[in-house]
Image 1 (cartoon, one colour):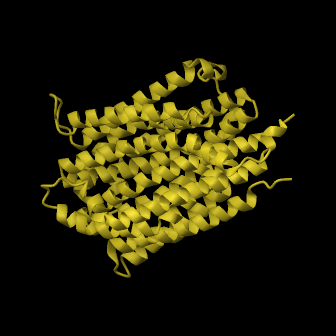
Image 2: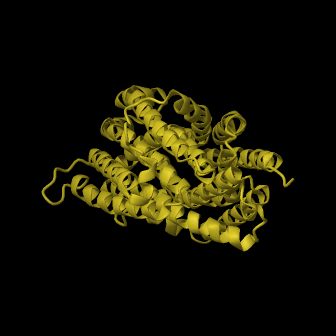
Image 3: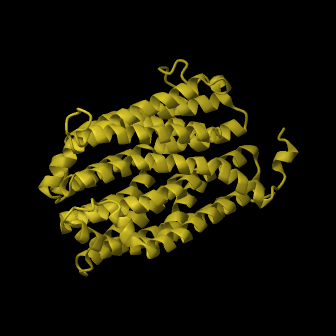
Length: 456
């Protein structure tokens, strides 16, 4: 029988504290995870504009594939949260293990795509120099896809069990290791060969593998977590659990692909304009994506809060916790808007070497992009928060359809029309992002509040 106290309404401050305790380490871990990519962009920018353009293109392809593959990891989070709250440790283990199986299988399927990415990028009209460097990057970075996705599954597992501190500190250590390996292999320091973009890719593979090993050791051998026996007979298939993770995860992956595909498509469109425009766009995307990691961490916390409330049958707590999480994310969005409007040139300038002759042009091109990004902050925060809340309800298929329509049917065509036929160039491409994100935010938020269980 469910404990009556667990079902009693909790004040907003209790949910605020829960959101912060869960969310802040997750925000930190997402920022640290993203700092891996930021480090690559910064160091490649210091190495040269052509290397930066190639690295931006390569990381865009890698991230697009990666984000699709994280659908299974994102399915694990609400499943584990609900099972743990319901007192079902066997279900915790089954969901996590099959999430790792599906993630590894996806990575194996995607490796050939990254290996032969050059011809595909040329078909998409990208500059030859950037294409060659992007393929060099992907042929090495592709081997890190499997450990990178396993990392995401283990992070979801630990977050759902409210073990977020270890996720943060392991990821911070990964950033430091990545910077050191980049310094050695991009520039040829400490006696290492000078590999440019290939050095950045090598660093990513090493770091993702080390991170996966660290999280696996913690998850498998920490005394408090041993009851889940996560790695016992890992090789044994579990068709029922695999089917459940797949059923919840593939729509999440496609929804994430639709969103990341919107941003990837803008990179493709920007490549049609020119190399400097692509570089400025890449920097602007990095800046906005870094702030997005804050919203993503809060969204993950919301997924866990909703999943646990659902497992307890606590409708009051579910709705109030969701409202608190939305308010937190909206506050971050408003603060970000102020920053973007106040200092766009300074933000862009951080990513280009002071003595680079292209620096003034890249800053001039990038500043309008940051100003447009300020416009879509509330929409971007709302759509990712709504996605997290709906995942907590294990509602994934209709959100996938909404995301596909908002981003691909509306957002990408709008970017092309505004950027090219209407002649607005890069700014027009970015305005298409505003439309896609705004439509998604309204529809997804509406769906959550209509589907969230109401008190009896």
